[in-house]
Structure formats: C-alpha cells, structure tokens
Image (cartoon, rainbow, N blue to C red; front, top):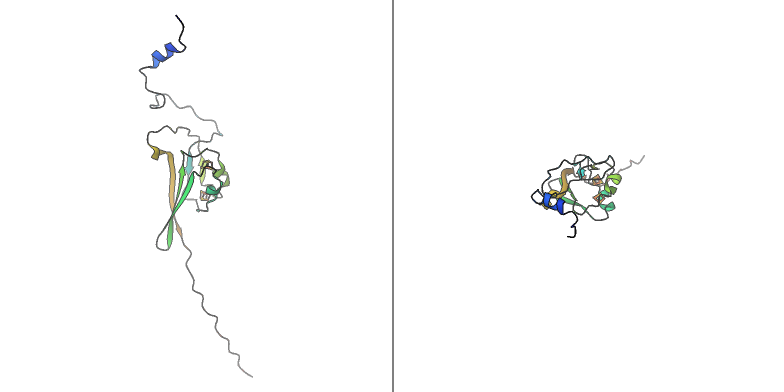
Length: 140
Ligand code: SF4
Ligand code: SF4
C-alpha cells in the first residue's frame, strides 16, 4: 500500500481546533525590528498628512469635521491594506505612529483591522483688518 504523506499527522489533528481560529498555542515573541500592527497616538498628531502622502497602498485616511471654531480630525489606518513598510512611522514629524511587534491579525470581524484616533484642532481666530488711520500733518 502506497504511503500517504502526513496521514498520521492529519488524523491526530482532525479533532483539534483550527490553527487560524483558536489560539490554543502560545504566541512567540517577534524580533526587535519586527514591523507589526500600527499604534497611533492621537495626542501628539497634528494632522499634517505626511503619513498619507508616503503610504503607497493608501491605507491611511483623514476625516475632518467642522465644529464651532475648531475641527475634529480623525486619522484611520486600514491594517487590511497596510504592507507594514514603516514609511509612515519614519516620516511622521511628531512620532505619532509606531509599528509594534504584534503580528496577530487573525479575526472574523474586519472592524478589528482598523487603528484610528481623533483629536480636536483649534482654528486660528480671524482678526479683522482695520483701515489705516489718516495722519493729518499740522501746517507750521
Ligand atoms: S500621524 Fe504624524 S504624519 Fe500623520 S498626520 Fe499625524 S503628525 Fe502628520
Ligand atoms: S506601514 Fe506603510 S503601508 Fe502601512 S500605513 Fe504605514 S506607510 Fe502605509
């Protein structure tokens, strides 16, 4: 009888939970320079949009909502489109983006694959320009 490769292994694992569904094993720690899940700090972001410009797969979006005298800025990182290139982290002038060592992206719910944060940006107060006052020189 011809041998079927891995038959013994397949029979042994047939009633075990699927590797991709239940994490019944301990995750190993990723190496120091690993580029995993993005962590965004909305407290330091200034909404400059540099990260959006350098992101090749267009995984970053910015939403601006106008409020009274201020703006609500929401930055959104789509981890489903991200290639984990780290360009956004390298170019962010405020160090608001960090690629962590977390590589676990297994999920049934796509909403888990977003990293986002909002902050309020105060708009500059408009100063009305006054017409220059006429200087009347006295005749001597
Ligand atoms: S995360 Fe950084 S690069 Fe992106 S908008 Fe905020 S400050 Fe600018
Ligand atoms: S790591 Fe790269 S692909 Fe992912 S959001 Fe940042 S720039 Fe875009």
